[in-house]
Image 1 (cartoon, each protein chain N blue to C red):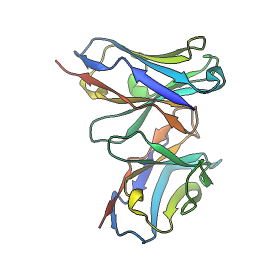
Image 2 (cartoon, chains in turn orange, brown; image 1 turned 45 degrees about the vertical axis):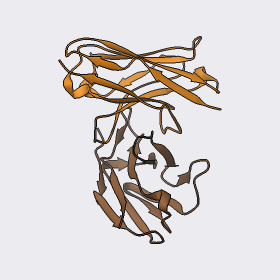
Image 3 (cartoon, rainbow over the protein chains, first blue to last red; image 1 turned 180 degrees about the vertical axis):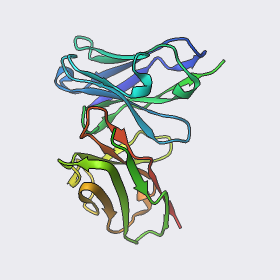
Image 4 (cartoon, rainbow over the protein chains, first blue to last red; image 1 turned 135 degrees about the horizontal axis):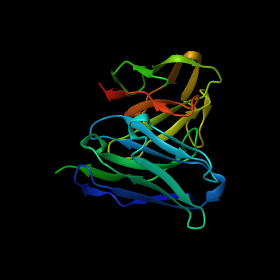
Length: 116
Length: 108
């Protein structure tokens, strides 16, 4: 059974950093791209970043370029989102999802709140 | 960036009715690289369709997708009580993926 479990969210002050993790199980992790999607409170879904299976390709939402970095450790079956210089508008539930095109499997989501 | 515009914003319908949700792209999605998701409150999204018209695993056949170019639709042939939720389209034509803003389907 495919399972994705996010961790690392919480309350953080503007300008500070946070690292989200997503632990995967139930499939061959290195064979799949992984994606981060976020959802601000009461708002729609917003694609954030994706990385291919071997980590050689990364793509980002324009508003997070230079601040967020997606990475993965295939030995640990995990994908990460390093978020630096956080802003209030980054406040959202962050989901990891399996795939680089469409997303059949999603984590439960992890809330990141950026506030002083 | 491909902007996806969904309409209507909200639909109020009754169980048993048929409905069509629209997703219009700001530029052509030439390969039909479009997916649809359903999201209920407090839950992660659920994949319904990919490649515009292919049902995901376990999705009932009352859901169908169609379209090409810039205009895509999701049709639910006969609404069941569990179908009421927010629906999103998403394109994977370009390197940076995008979602539509969503259509809320509510019980009348």
